[in-house]
Length: 356
Ligand code: G3I
Image 1 (cartoon, rainbow, N blue to C red):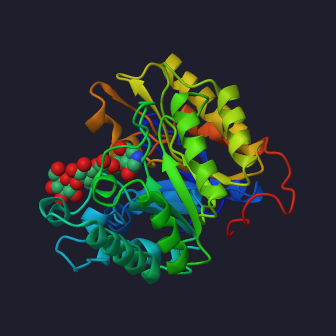
Image 2: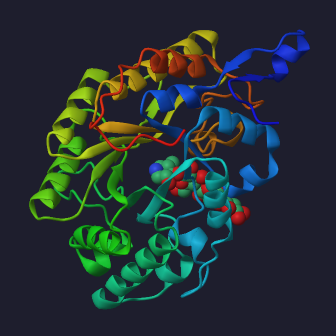
């Protein structure tokens, strides 16, 4: 069954004999000119029909939570298993969804074989080039926006670049090199630097700003900056500062994206905290919708049943717009309110309109 405008389900309410009316955010987001969606995986999209239907009513864009990372893709040197990534990209094509690419060059989720060996700078550069060409080349024209380099910056002002396989083998120039290879591999794709904890005005966002400004000044083909936005509802960033940060990055001529939004709660989630979460979801999306250079808003998962949060933050969870039974939470209605209040789309601003 394909849902056009309304989804009717919800396990809790079934108990009481009434199903909540779940707004389909996809058409609202598309009308607002926003690439709007979720991180997902081939496994769940293939096997869970209720999840799939909910996603299709909610999102016009998907991003692979893990299926396009170097480690999961390449279990042995020179060998790639594209089965999961292909399934996700095919699913998107079948349903008119856009695909964001995550991630090409990162310190984490690297193949074990890569970490186990010793490479010279020249060998590491070649490994990076081959990886970028192999993955981007396969999905050329199918993935519109890529996180080329992820989380390269630290909080420490004395050592602003994070220790990683890439920094240690190639040196700081690995960042510019990754963007140059990515541009060669798919000249049409929008190439992003992506990071966390750099959403508002802080030493870390200053370091990210300086990094991308310098890349632009050196003529490196970078198109945008992704702000991950993994927030704690009890200690959210100042959203005026987030808006100011978006503006200073936009003033560099860069596009922007909220790439991995979630808003975690201490468990068990109280009604008051779910309302606070809804307010944060509304307010962040409203900030994005007021910024013409930011036309992408991705949530890091669809349902609390599959969020990374409980595995990484003990005692926390409930960070996503649908609960573990796929019932809508106040957060979903917060996002809906923001989309309904979206300023009219002005042609010529931001990136291309999403499909459908
Ligand atoms: O798939 C394997 C499975 O085969 C194995 O048996 C099992 C045992 O641990 O692990 C499974 O892999 C896990 C994978 O998620 C898929 O569930 C990994 O252990 C686990 O580390 C991995 O976590 C991912 C995490 O990145 C790794 O750092 C999360 O799902 C993913 O949400 C998270 O996403 C990151 C972004 O890429 C970058 N920004 C931060 C964000 C949150 O950490």
